[in-house]
Image (tube, rainbow, N blue to C red; front, top):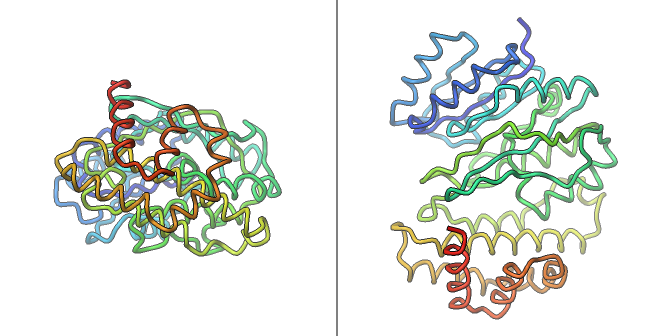
Length: 343
């Protein structure tokens, strides 16, 4: 049976949710799939659970390795994947049973290199669907990808995930595309920039089949161990793929990257002012102070302030103004008020 979609799932200490993830994969209405699990040195019972399901369904492949990180795990999956298209799922998450059938069918209709869809996330008890401001259900050609999609990566984070997309494997193989290794955060975005710069056709579906679970200790929430701000600075200053030099003036690139950095800072302020046992209030104040006085943040704020302020709502405008004034106390009280109001 030819494989239409290869799904790559990195696994690290996911025993609490991995069975739900596997069940959602095996229930796919598109049967011509393979599910490649990369056990990245899990110390819990994740491997045993995958072993059990592998005996039930021969579409499951299990590769075990010492803990080396999500990028190396995904790259190992890419090397063995046989599918016409590639999908990615995180071991904590689940997908709707028709997801890969819908994405694959749409890809074949227009011979698209990539299909993009929405995703649903739940954070602190609140569910939200991430959608995109792109034309829906039509084939988008290379010119649109260059003028609208690639610049979008510079100013927003919400397109970075690889889990709400399928990618034509032929492009990955012919161009030897891989995830950057030894990158603590943001490897999805770098992979996507490279792939989209090579794509000729894509389609955006206003369809939500991916359900993202925010778990305690996950890469995006482990504030005691992950220096998110330092990673944001690395992204802000990193060298971009060569195609960006052809697409945009240096000033426009700087403005888009500045908007993204300030949005990241605003997000981190909210996260760090959320009560946790991992860091004391004093430590959190100190970290936020470091962010808002940083020279790159001040420079980015100068470039992006007017454009961001004109598009923000009242809460975001207040946050932006308090960052500008370097008012940590003000930021603490407004984020606390927002959290209490949304409970």
